[in-house]
Length: 122
Length: 185
Ligand SMILES: Nc1ncnc2c1ncn2[C@@H]1O[C@H](COP(=O)(O)OP(=O)(O)O)[C@@H](O)[C@H]1O
Ligand SMILES: [Mg+2]
Image (tube, rainbow over all chains, first blue to last red; front, side, top):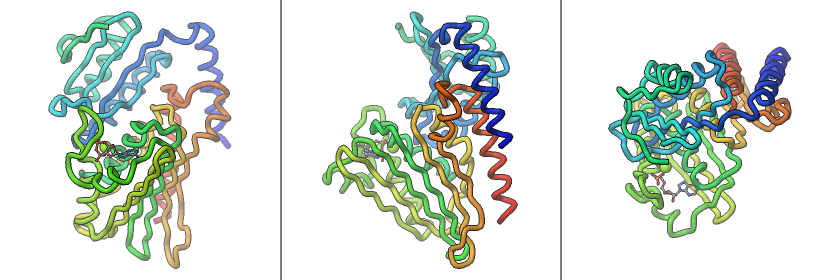
């Protein structure tokens, strides 16, 4: 099957990258998607984050979903969790903002203050 | 909710909250009988009889910050679309949620973005068995989309299913499978 060959290539690349980076730096991005009826938008944000990470060769960063954050009017909400840093919570995230967050925060290490909802002490 | 896929995401989130390590999602479109059936099964903490008896009432929740509306909204969709919701659960064993609605009903929501729902669920390291089948005359199988993360894990040899490239790969594969399924309608 052709598609499984592709999976093998991804696997080899990922294993190689893991060796080089000693298993990534442990950064995790959480996307809240709840019963708020904005789940549709949140799924698109998740795909945009994944796509931008892969384009920028930062597949060591994981993106996970989580339940409604209790701030429904600010959804979709994205939280960037970097080891030994404060969590940064972004609100009203769109696909485009999601791509900005990867380019500026993840790749360049600069918090995108325009979209920040709050910063939680680690 | 606007899409059946949003309900699915919401119900699977319950399963993930319940500590499930495995989830099964089964969507069946029965063309001849004009029904859509959705079954979501998990091996999480389950519910006792008291809780089970009231989970379809609005605002019943055992979690802080949650709305307690997921299952009531599902029941509402069923009621509007000439159908029903059934839930069974066993403490420490798991929960099964079952939806059965009329496919052509005015109030039957569109299936919506099932692919991105599945990809979102997969980001949570869960073992997932996903099947979407189309049944035609006499319940005969017209076509299906199947995703079993166990099979994918074997190919991955230690790389996580939630690795961004793997998730996008699975998404691409599912989109292709759905195009094939659409063709067989
Ligand atoms: N799969 C499940 N496993 C265990 N408990 C569940 C499951 N689904 C629902 N429940 C219980 O039912 C309650 C109500 O669920 P729901 O209507 O989706 O609201 P919410 O998720 O906001 O709490 C949950 O808080 C939980 O206690
Ligand atoms: Mg819920």
